Image (cartoon, rainbow, N blue to C red; front, side):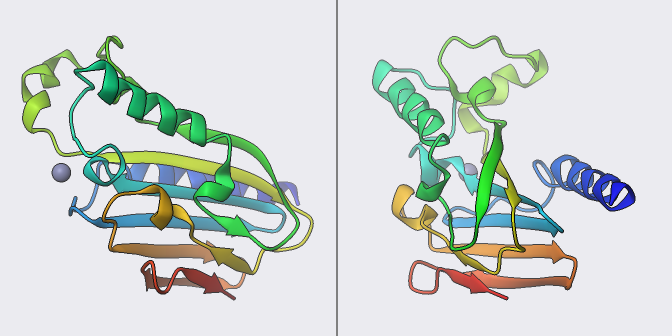
Length: 176
Ligand SMILES: [Zn+2]
């Protein structure tokens, strides 16, 4: 179990490092990565900011900032993004967007400052669960929380193997 758990952590580490800024950024198309190993389940979303906030730059008005804050708050309710029919308990959530989008936050990447107005970026957030039994049924409610998100490419790695499927608001369920 210890070895398995370390492998899981390594896998999630690779996923978290490799995905946020790699790959293409296409408006209306999001990605979700599912890593499941024994009782551990990690789900990471990458949604173009335009489909989350309707803008892709640091919030400049109080209204824009309110959108970022509201989205940040909604992470406390993962069922707004994904419903899992099995006995999984949320243990933590992570996000990598408030630093880039909240008004007045200190920008850690000074050299990117002048690109802000034309910067395309994804809103990246993840949920980590402990499951009594391996989760087998996922329903992506994220389509209701976003604007004009047409598709979500789901990629997964589990104890049983790996795969990928294109999801949409009309085809928003994943089962295995
Ligand atoms: Zn963009």
